Length: 180
Image (cartoon, rainbow, N blue to C red; front, side, top):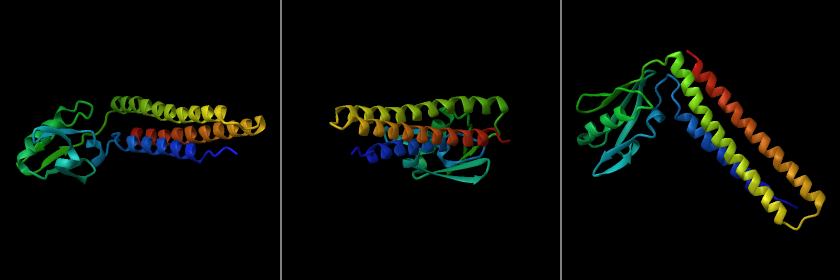
C-alpha cells in the first residue's frame, strides 16, 4: 500500500510557508511582520531587524522600533527608509524609531494584490512539485496497477485540496487588502 503521509506533510508545509508570506504583506494596518525582511547593518554585518530591535505596534497606523543598542538607531532608521517596497518614512528621537504607516491608495492596493499573486503561484508550484515527487515514487514502486491508479487519484485529490486552500487564503487576503 502507498503511504501519502509524507506528501501530505510536505504540502501542509507549503501552505504554512504561504501563510507566513501573507503575514508580511501590507494591508493598510500596522503589523510588526511588515518589517520582517529588513536587514540592518550592525556590528559590521547585515542582520535581520528582529535581532537588533524590538518591533511593536503603537496603534493601527504606527510601528515603534526600539533598538537593543541605541548606537544602532541610525542604521535601523536608514534600513527601513531604504526598503522601497514598503514606502515607509521612519523618524527617530535618539531612543526609538517611529514608523508611520500611511493609508494605502486604491492603486497601491491593486499593486499589492498583484505582487501577492506571485506568492500564490509559488505556493502552488511547491505543491505541484510534491505531487510530482509522489508520482515518481509511485512509478518506481512495485505496486499492482489498480493500487497505483488509486494512489495517483489520491495524490491528485490531495493536490487539489491544498491548491484550493491556497486560493481561499489568497481570496481572504485580497479582501483584507482591498478593504478601506
